[in-house]
Every structure is written in structure tokens, then in C-alpha cells.
Length: 109
Image (cartoon, rainbow, N blue to C red; front, top):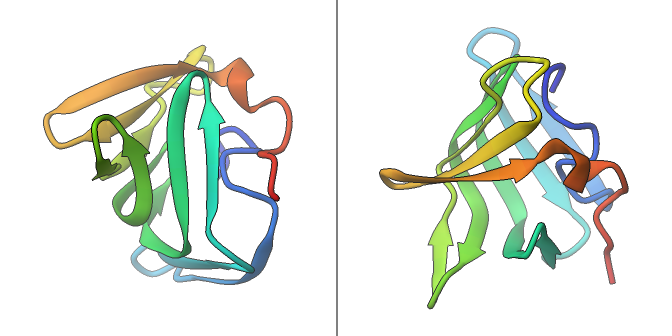
């Protein structure tokens, strides 16, 4: 995740796989994590999958945000390395979150 914040994912990683061929990845956590990031409730299921490029995670499965109910975050993007925001995309909608919200590791309980 070269251009994305280092603390974008919870630190309780049990294992992961990554394919340099197509950018697909899978991250297994020790348990599901529900947290708040910049006033948004975010859930990382025990296993998340998707594809990765320098500035984006996309085709995501296992990452959700709560509006009235849990919705799948399909992509997490950063327009440029020097951009001060990253975007969580849910369907056709996206929400900008300051990169500074990821300066500390996500709290895991």
C-alpha cells in the first residue's frame, strides 16, 4: 500500500497473501474489528479480499461502513500521493476522510 496510509488496516493481522501478477490480496485478522474512523463506523471482517494498486484498494469484500445498516466499501482510493484525503466508495457514493485520521494504528479490542 505504497501511496495509502500505513495504518489503514487494523494491526491484528494473522496472515496475508498478495499476487504481484494481478494485485489481488487477502488479509486474515485474528478477529473482526469494528472501529470509528473520522466519525464513520467501519467494520473489518475477519477476512478481507480485493485488489491493490499504488493508490487504491478495490473490488473489496469484508470492509463495511455503517449508515443505517452496514454497507460494503467497494474501494478505498487516494487521488495522488500528496492528497490530504482518501475516499471510501460505497456504490456510486464516496466519502472523503483526512489522511491524518490514520496517523495512529486502529484500536483493536
